[in-house]
Length: 431
Image 1: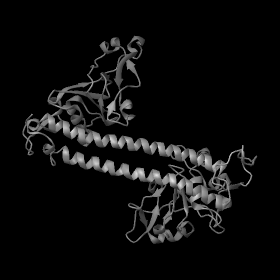
Image 2: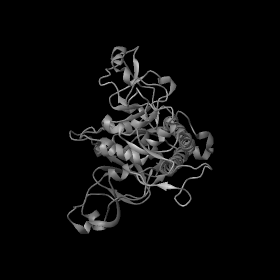
Image 3: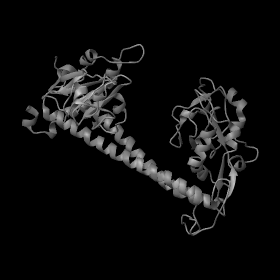
Image 4: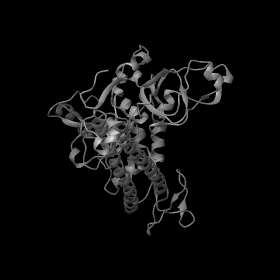
């Protein structure tokens, strides 16, 4: 192969990097082929990974099953790539394994560091995906995958150091994702506790052992609370409504329109809002937004919640979103969490109708019911939940920074644009 423009780097075809093999499936009608000890990897197994490393598979085969098909047993340290349904999952196996025909596997040669090959394939995965062929679904053949070219430093020490740097970032990403998952579990549990039992004057969570509760159509609730509906909490003259049926394709001097896709993680993503023609907007004055309005997605992906920020005052919504404008006696922040609660989300899902696209009609949205404390307690509960959500948001920002860092490092280190040779001794660089 020709030498790359980066000194000390070469381009190699994937089939020059080691043994590249396809997978196979033993006969499913032969019981003695299945439930053995050999890890048998499918694209579905790869789709469930949240780390670069593969340790197990949903199904295992026996030695007899391995001999009864054309699958190959590869050693730990080999790579596995999904080659169909879909193309593009990549992992490093930490155990011996074989695969089905939806995967290709590579046992790297002695001149190639497995983790470096993994990150290199991952970095070039768009190139791999473009090689997919097939009329029913995309698939990449062994021959096509063999021809993929990757750049490698000739020094094993440089490959190793690059992989170590990227692995360190990956571990930080995994730890941050785990922390977010833990924080989300805490938030979910706290929402259910606080929105069913509330907080007393001393700031303590109520319980039936220490506080008075009463029966209600929704179960036992604090005696201070009352059952209400979403419609009973909105301002007079501002009924719960949906927005523009056909907002058009955009207008340079138009009015921002919020779609379901723009509501994510409790926020309104403002970078790609459609701007509708002011003439269209003029026919939907009823659904124009004010700062502090609550938005609830009611069609397609139902149950997404957001509060309208000041900069979207006067914007509008589509027919797939409901606007909720609360009375002054209610805390919009409390209702933001209330609408996320399992109790309310279950009601939304219960009344969502449709086959291809599910939705809940406005009448059902208006009839959503819940137990409701007074405004002072609403504020106390919202403050406590906001602190937890703030922790989730802060950790999520850290995760985005780490992912951005990884992307930048891969672009620099896997192309030779930035070298790590300064971190290595002369003997390591020379190999």
